[in-house]
Length: 395
Image (cartoon, rainbow, N blue to C red):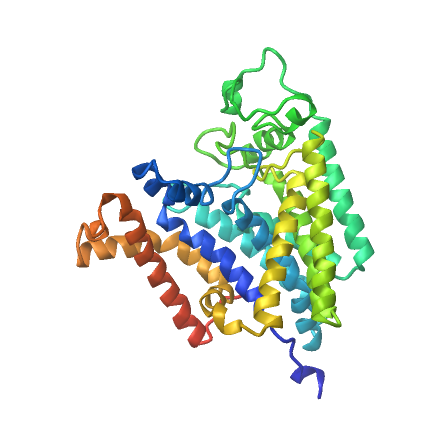
């Protein structure tokens, strides 16, 4: 068999996990928070609402794991992508051209989606696509290196990023908190050394007050309301490196048991290190600025999820159980764009052609569940049609 006829076997668990992550994002249309508000005495809807929203600052919900899981899977898929291109006798120069092109497309696609319905381009770089795009060339470069170099690179990235925050002076007694868009007595402020990672008074916030004002804006940038920042792409690269290492383990494993054992040991070490950093006050677990502790903590969760999907879909050969997820996972970019562009169109179409109150069939409390189900169903049907027609959007 010649190299041109060889193929890299697709791993069902990667597609299933990616589909699960994208489904969580697309399922925002259910708006569990609205149901929880309408039914304030329901612990069930309160639980679902919490896990479909981001925590205010320190901590983690299921929703907080969407972006790191997607970033982690970019790293997991890279060894397979590089092997596939090598089998096609693609030169290193051609691989780099594809990498840079992919990076730029992700960055500009992210900016485009964030600028929809705006009067001018919204230059922002903290969303999932732009964060991945900014770090992807560095990830690709590390894809050619050995595992030791990858671990060392991860350690340097996280240490340097943490040091940048630690060396940034804390706000003084005369600090104008209105400039940061957060109250001085905000209950989620951290104290002591951990205060270096407080919302909109940190190194990443200072960087964005300079960097984002280099671009044309309606008004000067002062702060991000959620505390998100451009510089998060640096530790996001750390998340992708964890995925890269795990992906190499998965691709090169001699046995499924060997991979699972190694991945679970890694998960335990990552969890323990992240919790130790957080509990000692050295570094809090904060997703919004992607602290080093968050990189390790979310990376542990992503690894654990991958192991679970791998065991069921690939080891136990239960791929058919995950058909709904695989349809989404194999067209993740299409799913991402569809979720950011078609929600309103599908809903308004039903109100025009079916009923202006079609979502009230089960009452006001559950209206977002009805409209969300309709939107999600039609978006999945589009992706299923593309899957059956083998129409896959790749960058």
